[in-house]
Length: 463
Ligand code: GLY
Ligand code: MN
Ligand code: MN
Image (cartoon, rainbow, N blue to C red; front, side):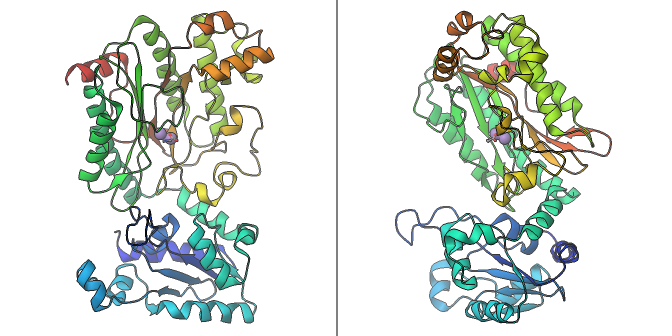
């Protein structure tokens, strides 16, 4: 946990941004897997962590936006809890850790909120993403849970996004801690990428490294020889020569800060000529996109730059044709690069996605495109110092998508479908780094994880 002063100062900043009323922050509770006493790994809500730091179930907090006073609602444990869970800090100790002066029993939250509502004080809340939280909020506010999202406070969403988007030095340190663990996860995967090994063996080792690092994984590991399926969570395949292993995985620290890294390793450790050709295009796309990152540039522009590199590269190998700039303008590259270049990252791997992607990644100057491919770009807006974002271009050969585009005669002036047919067994390549926007440019966070053809092959050969 950070110092109490960090949380107090974050709350003070938030309070100054919203004119009046109270902000209500429900913490996450345990979420059962198959019966109540057998819950999923506990994860506190990231906004609660940001302002109140405490990672345990049974809490809620309110910030009075007029007086600045914070109140923590929660209960001290009883003997029965101590028998099962061991001794726990008191609520008073917990509140002190995060600089909150006032604590009240959970049972008083309903009356507190009712009092606000009856006296006409606005109760600001964020859109819930868990059913249990929606039920609680619905009950407290007298709103049908299905309708909560329309009543969520836009000023609170915007204030939280503005604050959480800019990372402080101590947050960057946390992200780099997560990246140190991710380094071990990825280099282990490279060394294990040999024929006869199963994806699950590698995924299992990598997840173990995340746990041994003191936190957990920041999202379910993608570890697959079928990387053409973008979020493939199946780990049952045996690795075989000629396939590429995409590993998209990261750790999160005990405090909840994420890393999100992708590397692609040829099974057996040596790229063949065809793999190398495509890999070099993706490598150029990530490296030159990173170089382009600086305050003031729109991330959509960086995405379009990556798309241009992909189109030019695929033209040079004969898969695309015509003018690359025109191909990108018409979205032809999206047959091979159908997703966005990246997203913000912090306490969430897709930072603050629960608050609404367009509030995080777009603004009045930058609206989301509806073109296939570009529409998936989560972050399009102008970059500011302190933002942490991912850069993750890829090239994929998705047989079903190729068939559909060909059948529909899409972008035939830009795509050599006969040649593309011969790549349907290729799979996919993605490379992803986590980048801090600095005052003058950017810095790739963490110790460099092998990325060039030579470095990936050398790491694979060391296993
Ligand atoms: N790990 C999912 C992503 O890269 O966004
Ligand atoms: Mn990723
Ligand atoms: Mn990512």
